[in-house]
Image (cartoon, rainbow, N blue to C red; front, side, top):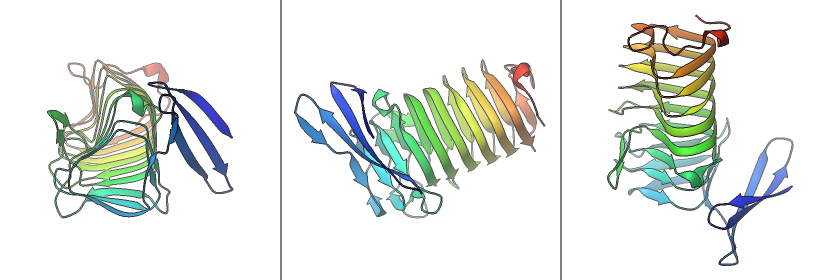
Length: 273
């Protein structure tokens, strides 16, 4: 199957998709009309990769299943172009600190990252990222992009990280089978964004489970547990919920001055505990 679609800056992308009974493998090339050359994406893995300095990727990147990326203290991975993480349930992609400390952040940012897909990724001991006057307040940070699909994401940390997953100005995100646990602030922060969250669990935060600001999010089959302040905090946001379970929080839903009510779309609630 050959697909051709417009790409930014006079680039066109051709995909060749080989299909078998178990999975789909993608061989992707980027065509630059100005240089009349085919540029292959950067392929990482499988196997172990170590970085001692922040890496900024300004071309498309494909990370293969079974890849383990070890990052030094405060090191970030910053992707400014489309990212495909092709992990599997048996051979996930793992990004973690190289020693018993923490790395910075995994960052996906900018319009060129539109359409990125992440499958079966484990992130261990990420924290806040700092790079060239920018701060990334999540082990995984998605910002200023759209049409992002993530399935099978696990994030956990024992360091002083702010958020597990931080989404800022992302339109049409689709997250499924997400598990985030053990963070100092919110497990998951969404700001100025719109999307859906399905079949996911969030556990153990000193503050909030899910923090929404100026956002519109649909939740289905989601469990949030053991968050000291509140399970969900809403600020000028809207959520629709289907089978959402909130356990062991000081507040279930904190809607600023109207706890348990502000921002809820009650017509969309079918089963709520």
